[in-house]
Length: 201
Image (cartoon, rainbow, N blue to C red; front, side, top):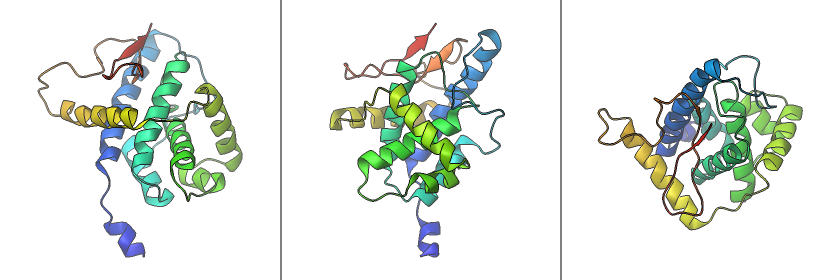
């Protein structure tokens, strides 16, 4: 069984999502030097040593959840970022936001899932902290958990386009303009069929 887990290919969504979140976090780290940002319960005292890519791979490896949960977790992160614009995603909070959004998406999407204590262990935090993060995330996103098939497809398409922007030189500006030093969120307007970037000034 362990051999089977090791030979399982890593879903592309992990690479796409980690690439996007890495760019957003780095951009907001730079803007933090110019514009003070508020601290939330998701904010760590120091940057985690594990990369976003490796963290997502770790979650996928041990959580045994479907790849679609990572797309739904991305939707939840986006909704949270829109509603909590004073807490932009950065290197100090992205890992806790990720483990929490994946935990919530697994509970909403999958029939069988591990408990909070297991996810806390996978995420490198205590069970008590995992419980607090889950509650804070749910209230912060307004308990908006339903993801329609159309919205799911839209976010999948965006993640695929994100991967294309990694190939230099891009034919058009990337979806998130990193040249502007503002609090950047990977937000989309759910009322429209196309993704739209929103910047909190």
